[in-house]
Length: 423
Image (cartoon, rainbow, N blue to C red; front, side, top):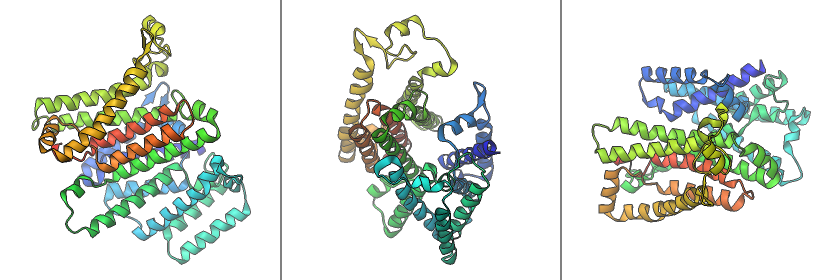
């Protein structure tokens, strides 16, 4: 039963994010049903003796009751365009989730002597405190808070999940990501509502739901990595960012999504844009796909395929990929994939993006080529991610965390650029 419920929770989260990423809410009922059916079928595709959903559960673990409920409500809203609870209900729950996370996660990561996670192992005082919070929420008519708290407590005492800790029934990183994303979205909705006549610059810099959720997801995962590297570097390197581990597969997922965005753009605009525009978009999609393949050595480890003699002799890890090759004692990873990309990123963010906003001729040329230009907040998100991963994370494997953040943030830039009218 715990295995079935654990798989079901992961499936609900996958379906919700899938509907959100495909913007199902804005599509017809028939298209929504097709998207839902495709995602359900994709989850049960067998890969190396295990269905895809099983790999997802192995990567992210079991979902809390709160995440279950939020995913169900999100799926319902995406499919029916109706909300079951008021904005006030959601606000109460999201504030409680953020406050609980600030209480739980910093202390659990070892930043203090006290570990509140231990309260979840059968503490009657903790149960009583939660019941009092639920009673207060019921009195103030925060119905969603009451439902999440009571449902989580009952699920814990019925042992419906594998965890024996009450915290895991109430909160997890996914629910925190959803809470932060919802709050940021509401703040910007209010800001946009106050601006009666937004300028063109405001429109090109506007946030989307997917951008907000992605920012929160990347921030949570990077901060977890920072906390883990600071307190248990061995666990960070051998579990969190290891080969074929959680961060590596999330990196592959980010780049794969980026390639799909580019290929879909080529297909959609094939009759209205120039061959040069379409060719560069196709090349960008292939570049995303190439990096995703390189990240997992083109499935070599997954399929248990041995490397050819050339790669065993010239590859630093003896794997079938190009970025670990050594030619004449020079590592391509450092020369091209580190220094070369660093130079390109400086030119892209610090030179091309400012020139685009100041020089109309350059802007016209960039739009004709189909080069996505980052929004200001996208550039800031990339900078923050790099500062945390490169300056704060004390580990030789911090580059893996930066690759993960870059995969999702660059995908967001490609999907939602400031020059979106060109696409």
